[in-house]
Length: 246
Image (cartoon, rainbow, N blue to C red; front, side):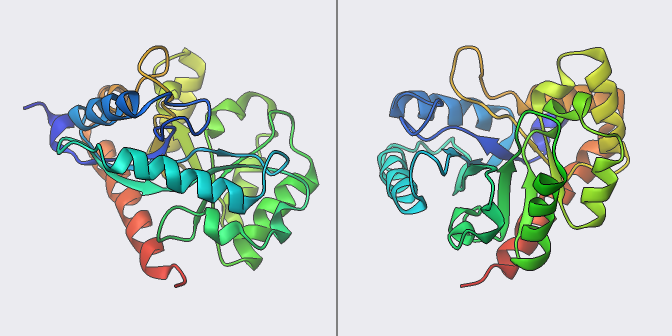
């Protein structure tokens, strides 16, 4: 057994719920994605379908998510990770005042996966993310920050982290692009990354790939970094579950 298969990984970002968004298109594809993740060492997987406030209210989204999960849960094989329900919540003006935010957090936790706009962030955008973290009693986990590194102010990450905002990086950042890989490797080594995610959508061009990223991390930083990363993720998930409000 190779070293990376011995580590029980947590995938904080995936689109595995069938026919929920632009991710898995069927129960069978979801099962195949889960099995492939399990083969790569993933033992906990957060299902984070897209939530767009401009398209539907939280109640409708949660009802759709429940139905999608019901279809998948009845077909889960034994060789599948434990699934936590969550959402990838797209930022919108006024999000910090949304009453339903706790219901969009990862199941049993106060962790909110927040997708920021694909542009240079304004002060209002970052202020709202911080406001959620400081005033709403939630832990904000910014989704796939590797996508924003090239066009945000270098000091924005330190500012957000100092105000309680956490960062999630996609596995693809470790697999493509020398410059981005070097940057995220440094951030991981320095303890700036709280969680990894595959952001998998299907079994074709966006397959589960967390194990491939872990292989790169092992090679570039070392096995100890992989262990520390996974301990950090497990501690985060466990501590937030215990802190979540009933």
